[in-house]
Length: 321
Ligand code: FES
Image 1: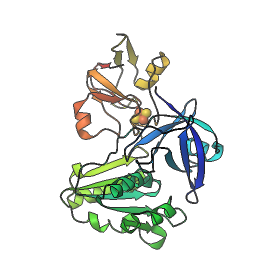
Image 2: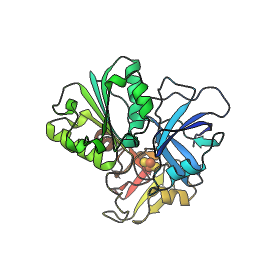
Image 3: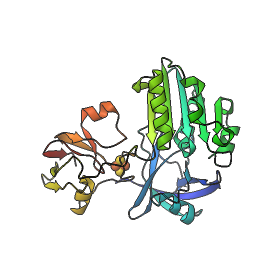
Image 4: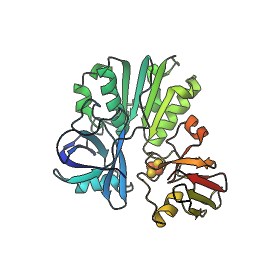
């Protein structure tokens, strides 16, 4: 597993409940370049690895900026960051990985809910730098709960940013942004935010006539809890191409669980099928995809599987490990 050593260079409060963390290479110099929409996995403990979107400009190659909202009811990543991380702390991170890229289009509509602003802010920076046509909508509960508000207001694309607060009666439930009411050809729509927010936008835009290929989404939580391993799938075998060894995956365990228990090194991060860290080549057999990260075309190709949550439709899968 390739990792990078970084240092927490600075920490800033970016709303009542969110902080941004500026990471720089521990050895000095630049960090690997990244595309807008990319995320990194932050290693916070032996079994605590969490993905966070980069929210700075991709042209900014000396640092990575992540912004994290504290979620006391979450799985522990944001609490650890908020409570334990101090300036000067060394961290291990993955190189940037992108499953939410900008696509070629005449016009781009970016719609963020809450902390979902992070990848979209990096996209707005990239689009502004190339002189592209875009608008950014940011929906939050209130001004105090708006992550990165000052940066948005002072950015070069401030006049193309529309901020909505539900405590002012302006929420996504009161109506879609004007740019989404009527489908426009050659326009790409990007949505990131809480599950209900995203489901609402996808449902409404689809009903308005937008085509699935125009809608690009990234989730921070699965749309529905990952199906229990024993729902709809029995035992199957995963075979490792490099060793020829096969391992039985019972109905109540994931492929990743089984491989890790047998000492096979695998890459994991969210363990919820939303980050893509565990995507593994499939050389034979048919995956039963249960992730949120692959596109319909990628799923249909069946040549990669998220081993943290997906299963098999055939008695055996041959994995390119
Ligand atoms: S670890 Fe994130 S998709 Fe599997």
